[in-house]
Amino acid sequence: MTPAPLRSQVRAALERAWAAAIESGALSPLPEDAPRPSIEVERPANPEHGDLASNLAMKLARPYQRSPLELATLLAAKLVRDAAETGSDSPVEAVEVAKPGFMNIRLRPDALAAMVDGILDTPDAWGRVSPTGPRKVNVEFVSANPTGPLTIGNARGAFIGDLLSRVLEAGGQDVTREYYFNDSGAQIDNLGASVAAMKRGEPVPEEGYQGDYVSDLAAAVPDDLWAAATVDGADTAAVLGRWASGRVREGIESSMERLGVHFDVWTSEGRLHEDGWVGRAVERLRENGHVFEANGALWFRSTAFGDDKDRVIYRSDGRPTYFAADIGYVTEKFSRGFEHLIYVWGADHHGTVARVRNAAAAMGYDEGAVQVLLYSWVRFVRDGEDVSMSKRAGTFITLDELLAEVGVDAARWFFASRAATTSIDFDIEQMRGLREALERGDHEEASKLPVYYVQYAHARIASILRKASESGLAPAGSVAGTLGSGPEAALARAIVRFPEVVEDAVLGEETQGVTAYAIELATAFHAFYRDARVVDPDEPERSAARLALVRAAQVTLARTLGLLGISAPESM
Image (cartoon, rainbow, N blue to C red; front, side, top):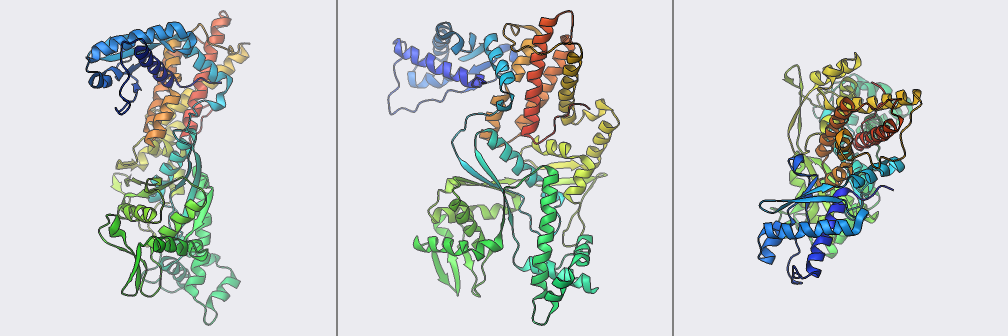
């Protein structure tokens, strides 16, 4: 079993050192009503200063009315004594105090070895961390209207939602991925009217949809459906719209699977109305005194929760608004036992956030359990020019077309390595060029896109292990006693950081730290391979230990790439 992350072990050691200082009388207990400073442990900016560092002494300076340097010296002595008394229970080898009160901590080689051995023993568990709070989480993302294929404009939401779900699962959360189809209303009727017009050879209505995909839909309408849609009294647009949106949905599901995104639940707006969820939500609001009627319409008193105006639920003609479906959806999700709802929306939904969270609070739910992540838009560029898109005009690049050009792995890395709230440019031609470089074997050019550099490290390790096997060498069962110094220690220090990277990604709900770590680990491995001969039949014991270390590096690279939904190739 892999031990707890070393950062957590050091935090626990600091806790013991503080308690020991109190027990010895060197420090007094803090008053019960005084805030207790959190114990922070982080990597120092300069690795030469140590493996980990803590500013606990500076946090304690004010409550104890003592200098940070004095407190750091006291706690450092307790840390060293704790390490001597607890032995293998402490990861601390040495502590250096630095002004104004930092404690720079160096880790014991045996602690590094225990982590690496844990990877070798249970590779499938490596990188999974303890939950920050046991939560059953619903992540709803993409949710593009089924009026046309997924375009590159939908890409960022797809990547962000899937990456977030993977990170939360690594953090011990029970995650359900969900796609919400807005499959009712005027837009679906407009799609149906467009299909009917094209099938008849007539001009598409002004509010309709153009493009080859509409023509393809028109050609695929079954004869019996066409007869039912055009019989006297039939609502042709509605009948064909429902059918066409279903066909579009099938294409969307196929695109998501091609991207490596699997949805657990597909929910339709129409079902929320049909199954009475909107009515249930309105009734909850009514019971709590938060709805009223005015001008023939039914309103939610959103201003009572800080909104700039009240919001219509049902129009004066009885038709529900989109907001009506939103509140019904909140109720329906919580009814399934979810403790936390995450919506991944584009920045243009900013105005919707407050009213949905306000409605959740008004219905008696925890407002904090409704979270909305707003991501910035992507500017797609081809040959130096912006790619302009319009689904209604039929001028767009589909997500499938983008993936065919640049590859799934490259696209996933691109979005994973950038914060969701950062506006970015995506140069399609540049990305395609790097993929073509990889395909022709130009690894130096291809490595300008870091995902290929990281994947190459994984493939190189696979090659080393194959070569070792052919030479009759195999990885040792343990690396104990081999990580005191040199290239082995440097690589081990990079490997054991992985759980900390996962913890940070879970707490920050971002993945750019994961991609940065992947590059760091690949770089550490390449440096190790440069400086240490791994496969040496004349030194079988040393080779076995080094093979075990590179095997741990391979597992970590694969787990890191897997966290991003990226493949870990055995050869390139």
